[in-house]
Amino acid sequence: MPTKFKEVNYSLSHLISEIDLGSIGLPEIQRPFIWKDTKVRDLFDSMYRGYPVGYFLFWANQNIQSSREIGTQGKQKAPDLLIVDGQQRLTSLYAVMKGHPIVRSDYQQAYIKVAFNPLEEKFAIPDASIRRNARYIQDISQIWHPDTDPYEFMDDFISRLREVEDIDRERLKKVRSAIAALQDLSHYPFSALELAADIDEEQVAEIFVRINAQGKKLNQADFILTLMSVFWDQGRFELEDFCRSAKQPNKEEASAFNYLMEPRPDQMLRVAVGLAFKRARLQFVYSILRGKDLETGKVSAERRDAQFAKLKVAQAQTLDIQTWHEFLKAIRQAGFLRADLISSDNTILYSYVLFLLGRHEYQMDWYELRRAIASWFFFAALTGRYTGSPESRMEQDLAELRPLQGQSQFVGKLNDIIANALPNDYWSTILPSELATSSNQSPSQFAFYAALTVLEARGLYSQLPVSDLLQQGLRSKKSPLERHHLFPKAYLERQGVSEQRMRNQIANYALVEWSDNIRIADAPPQEYVGQYENRFSREEIQRMYHWHGLPENWTTLDYPTFLEERRRRIAQVIRAAFEKLQGW
Image (cartoon, rainbow, N blue to C red; front, top):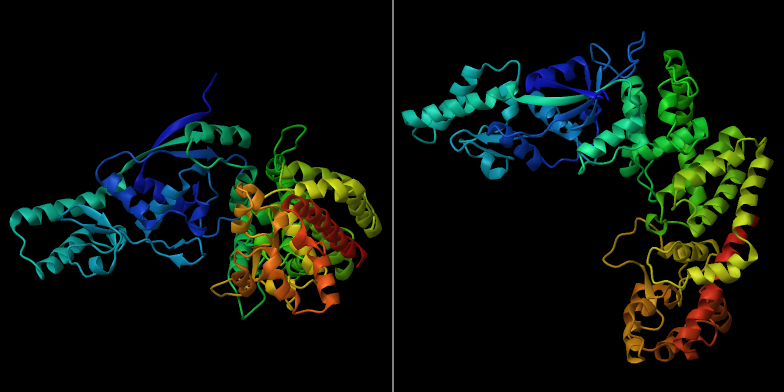
């Protein structure tokens, strides 16, 4: 069987030149760089010592040339090769050799500065002591700058060094030799495997995994983002700019910043793709965007441009700041006020796809749309609808929506899906059994906290609403609201309940103010409850116990009976909140 690759040798300077020309696509030069500077230092140290530092894996980019060169601003041509493996390494080399800034994970631009001590032949990341040390070239990027004369550079360094110490002939020779060797790294040899243009993305992913077991497994989103870098780099920039703004508060202008999710570009891409093509599986979207006819296998630039045009419209709608924040209102309307109460980002992403379809496909007004999606989000979060095989589940949901006409059919279908998933025995049997866990990431526990917000409940033995106490963004040494063991752990241990799993049951927790949690400590319920009940009227206590799923005589129950009874009541509280959402 013929090989699917060929081996090509490059010098480092040739690689850098090909990137500058645009022959090798290196999109990561403007995207978050995850390597630590020390790793870049070690890379140059290994090269200096003549050690191998690995290969690159390129993919020959077929059907690229066209009259339109999207995403090649500042380049002389569109890329012939896309880099599949070695992106961080090649970005490091390019950034240092060219003195080019990289983008940190916080989206701030920075230069990678690597220092070099020619006398000791030692590389370092400059700190305060190194910056004061004349033995170091402070930034090796300078030696490859096109305006740098290597002889003048060497003489200037030696002149500065002589100001602080004497240099004999042998040491002078060592300095000159080391600087020459450093400069000569531009000729360092690299090997690259170039994958053939006619293999598909699934084969590329398999090859990548097989030869680089420690590398990140490529997914379909990676391929689509790479394709965007070639044909619509502005679109990829817009994705990244949106995600950057979602992380950073902005007092000057509207932004995507919020306390519920810090999305990644690949996640927002999934939303845009879901809206554009009504697909959750990305398996075929890459081929569609390449302009490939899935029946004939033929690729055409015209078909590619038409599909990108669809994606451009959908992405603009997805990244619209007003629309994004109207959607986030729906999540808050569902009672989910904080990111740590949402167990899966997919629940947010796929609910946003439905929100966008409701707005743009079915022309729903904001109020009715928020109500419908708040109900859907609560249901999806409660049941963990998008936690297992999320693409398959969302693909099914979108398939059911495709033939619908008008907003009444759209909302009706969402309600039908919910009704089929939540029959009466779900509330009476299934949900109480799901609450029988000690997991602190249980969707049913988070739904209970959200339900307390929807029902406008107060914290247990508190005058403050749960919604106020759960408010994201407050900062203090202690959280204003804490999970408290109603039957304290030490008390249960004295009663012979030795398993931590039993002591930490969801049904044994309640949301109380931090100051109350401290005072309660390890006292049994019969001792501490009376002093808190005295704060409130009888009606207030009854209403509070109803909200928090507590039987009126709960302090007198044995622990297993208490857990069983409270689970049943919590399930009914969640149901009441859900029905309130559906009735709004």
